Image 1 (cartoon, one colour):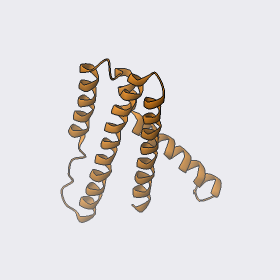
Image 2 (tube, one colour):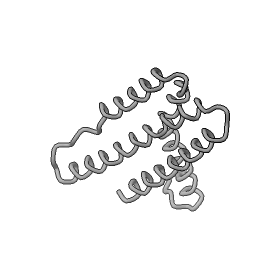
Image 3 (cartoon, one colour):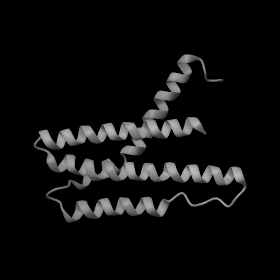
Length: 130
């Protein structure tokens, strides 16, 4: 389980770096609505990532102790995605809807890329058993 927690911390760090890049893009380019949408979506994506990380930890503890397993927070995460879409739809001059949706998917892209990089690193270091 420590490896999973390390992965989640690493992915959160990557998401925060992406948010910083999006803030710079919003501040220094003329495409402010696009970067504002990316910021909105990625912020809620980071929130969803945080929720799922906490819920996975509770889930694994419940399984280890033989208790009933709690929910993984699907409704809460869907609600935050709906909130992002509502904000972008109500303020189309400030938030680009497509970039908001792309921002919402950012955490999943980061997870996939991080998994690929870690898999490659383990394979090249010879730590993976075939």
